[in-house]
Structures are given as C-alpha cells and as structure tokens.
Length: 342
Image (cartoon, rainbow, N blue to C red; front, side, top):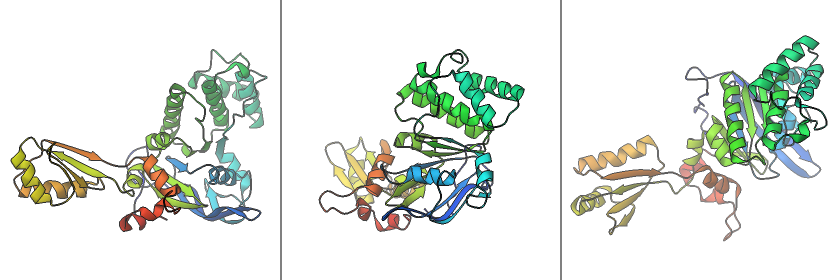
C-alpha cells in the first residue's frame, strides 16, 4: 500500500506512533530454499499487526527471527528500539512470545506454572506471588489455579500461556496462531484479551490462519507469499485491491430504473428486479460519483447496498493460482490495484 497510508491504533486518533518493530530486507534460507526474500515492515507501537500467509509461507520464521530464536541471513531489524543482532538481550527483555503450541507444563498446576515463570524473570518471591495472583484473576483462572494444567481445556491453556507471557511485563507480544484449535467461544475470549492488551499500550504481532481474526483485530495486515510481502494495508484497503466489488441499486419505479440505466451507462442490469449492479471499489469517492450522477438525472434509488470482497478473496487472489492457467491469481488484479501491491 502507499507509504502515506497510516494505520489507526486501537488507542485512539493522534499522531502516528513510533515503530515498535521494523525490518528492512529481512532474508532467511534453509539450504537452497528461500523462506524470506527481503521483508520490509514497520509496525507502530500500541497496535495489532497481523501477518497472513499459506502454510509454509514463513510466518513463524519471521516471528522466530524477531524474537531472536533464530538469526536472519540478511537484512536488519529492530524490536522495541533494539537491534536484533547487536542487542538480542534488549529485545528479549522487551518482548513476550506465545508459540503455536502451548508452553504450559501439564504436570504442575496453573499457579506453579506462573510462579516458575516469575522465577525465570528473577522476580522476588513476594513480587512473583503478587504478579501471579493478579494475572490469574485477570485471565479468570483463579478457580483452576490449584489444578494440574493437564486438566485445563484448550482455551484455558491458551489463557494461561498468555498470562505466563505477561509475567515479564512485555511491551511487544508475538502471538503465533494463538487461537488454532480453539472453539468459537474460546476464540472470541482470546480476541477480547488481545484488545485489552493493546488498550493497555502493548503492541501485538499476530500470525493467524483465521482471516476473520485478522479482520476483527488488526490495525494493519500483511500477506506473505513466496518469501515476500504481497500486499499490506488495513483490512478495508486490502479488500479494495480485489476485483468484484460493486454497488447494487434497486428501484421501485420502472421509469426511475430506466433513467438510472441511461445516467450511469454501465454495470449489469436486472430488468425483472429493476436493479443495477455497478462495479465499484466501495470507496467514498466511488460511491459519491454514482450518487452525483443519479442526482443530476433527478433519480433516487429505493435501495442501495455496497458489496466488497472479503479477506478470503484477498488471500486467495494474492496467494493462490488460477487452475485454468496455472498462473498466480495476482495477475488478474486490475492495473490500479497492482500499483499498491508489493
């Protein structure tokens, strides 16, 4: 997307926040397989950033590099103001990481898991118990605190996992597919936890395969494909990249319908339903243009609905292939949209 487009943080309207995470030309290969081929990112503090991509696209590799679990082969990255290569300790002190698989020890209780994490963060015994109690209450785990974690449901384990991540009071949290395998209720509970974290000033770097999740939570989304960022922007900006959006106008009066057909001069007609379907990217400017032309003709539609592609359409267009040609469906994007795709 154009660099002038800035995300709006959940924390409210104001000046753009400084970058919590930034990368330039990040590269990683395993043998002759290139996983990351020059990744550029800039993620404002206090926002939710979602990284999407098919299995094997390199999402987890990005998280591992930025959390200093593995090293990059090239490029630069800063996390919380620390260079990941020159100051990995500074990065680790500022972040929390929740991976695809729970780090909870099922043989001990939830409370013991929390206290163990407090010890790893070198908190005093009193401070560790205070932080543990606060987080267990915050994540609604007080009643289960004395039970072995192996008895917890998937949603409870995920909540405990994130609570353990927060023991060190991180400024940036990496959540690698945090709701995989959870039922819808547990997933929505996790979404609420993420919103609360961000409202408290935490930056969340989220990878997910649930497109609804990215649409619901993220201030900004990037689609990773073939080792590169295929596109980046807000959910609405990404949806406008994909053809198929339209405005549907329906008229009760046949005369008004005929006048609208003449005034607009484009789109698909449904003479039986007295409806017109006008191609549109769903933007305010496009909608105003349609309404202005109707006003000039003295015509008013009885119903107007705007239809835009969803993130599923974006995902398949940016990462899929056309089975008829074997070519990337990205090639089917209109020329104007391609200018906004990296």
